Length: 627
Image (cartoon, rainbow, N blue to C red; front, top):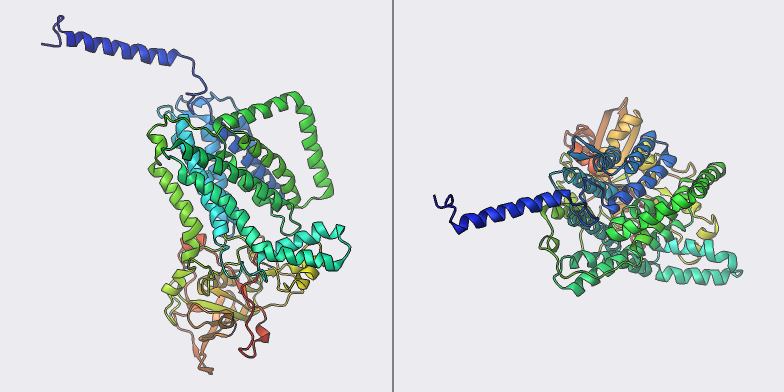
């Protein structure tokens, strides 16, 4: 009765407020939208647009390298999607560009996941980043959910935090006794190779060249860690200071992560200049194409407009240059790494332009949402943290973990100064019972007639270090005659060891031998295998080379174990039949499929095992292993 009374002031006040709101809503609908309030229904964030184009460059390289036409199809489809009109929509609910980009990203994730665990570390980085971007595009592309610039910033923040952890972990895991020892460190091989390739042509005296190489050897471990921590530490500063209420701290954090990104681009360029076989330019493209999320939306939009203007003004020249480059490359039969180097130049230049001369001043009037991370952001960061640190600590992961070129020991005891590795191998070590997936401890492959088990052995790449011959001589001159191993290309690239390389003993976790034995039965059919289970799960190099708890002899015919016997170290002559809990007698599915899919461990060769006739000589520590 009161609200219907015409003389009631409350009634008139409420009616006036309602009419005002209706007028505001109508004006908002009719008002032309500006660049500051465009939703994802109207266009993609410029960083995501460039993310799609730059990752396309890597897919094009991968197609050239492995000639997988699924990748070429993705490249063409994604290009059409990104070039389509921004306002194109389906049933007025979804933006075609957003959904199309998301589906193309998820399809590439699916292709990479099919190859797991035999993929590289940068593939894991790409999988995690692309999945986050794709899911955000799908759930934020509905017309009901306004994808503001702030929400796009939260997405980029999540990917930035993940890459900060990846880069930091890459340097962190190098804090181990083997990497910091210049004799045998991977860093020494790289620095001496650079001296041999770039300095040697201008130095006539071999004594002078050796002195330069010796100096490079001494600074190599510290210089490598400094470079990688400069990148990861700068990005991590931006991660930790984001959301700070102090505008100066926000500005410093933003400046720090910009510096870290620029250093990362220069670091990847330096890697491209490495002589073969260490010129992993593909790693540079795959990572740098995703670093565009570190740029601001405004600066990225400016770069896109500049590129579009150049294409309009000089399109024929640019297209002719690209066609000429491809024609020259195919005519000269460029290697995949050469192609990757050529493709990295435009990718790195575009990301660098987006990061350069950016305004780092932050407005003080930030909203509450900008000052905190959402639950889905913390979930994405948690996955990146688990991958960066937990996988190596527990032993759940070694191949494709962020410990590239680190000389890190994951089985046989940790050589890291701060953190343990391979914890689960010790937790589930139960003497003679190998039935648990992580059971069985560490084993040493003594001899085998299996081609597959021989292929698993890491390839000695020392004779292939360019410049061939000179690099090896310089390494020997500075006191590094040890082999330089590629620990995984045989498994990932399906290559075979050099025919001149004699089989050497190596150790692997029993978990990995369960995989190798299953694969050998499927690929070889008939073979013999002799391996030893070591005492305990931790020890030094002499322990790896000499320890024997049990010796197991296996005879496989037609893919089935025909004979299996065990001898105890205390009585080697007395052999007993294997039991159902011994590794060769386990079912092929004894290791859960999810564990087979996500984990692969590397074989560590026994160096100088033939010289161990007494305990007066210490065997070499963990030698250089490629990623």
